Image 1 (cartoon, helix red, strand yellow):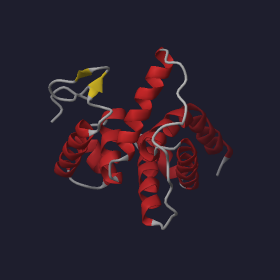
Image 2 (cartoon, one colour; image 1 turned 60 degrees about the vertical axis):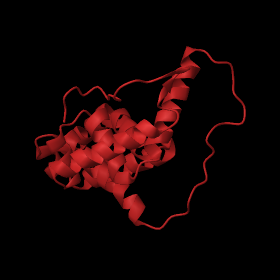
Image 3 (cartoon, rainbow, N blue to C red; image 1 turned 90 degrees about the vertical axis):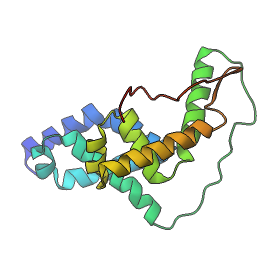
Length: 182
């Protein structure tokens, strides 16, 4: 790789590292897996940086590599992990702890989705990509994206921790900030 391309790649990594790790975290549910996944995706992008940098959107290209690498994790045989639902002790509840608890519940709900549904939800609602962009990224039809999103949202609606705010049940449809996106 030429020095100019090397510098361009390093600048890309500096600018996008934290965003890519956050996306990987939502896909994997584990910060260590997310960092490993991001490093793997960036290593693959580095090997073909000339092609990646010439694309319309290098970030979208690397994000697709990230999603594909995450899918590859499930194709390989691996040891199952046994995670606990909650820590054994609960500290005092202030606003920051409450937000962290909400994130933990959302992450647990996302982790309960099948990998393809999780990828659709993360790309569609976290990354705010259109159905067509998600379909292109995942190599499927727009209809598949719609059905996977519908199934995922239905499953998320039934998750015990997501249906309530305090003591009040949520009424109506669960919205992910995408009005009329169907």
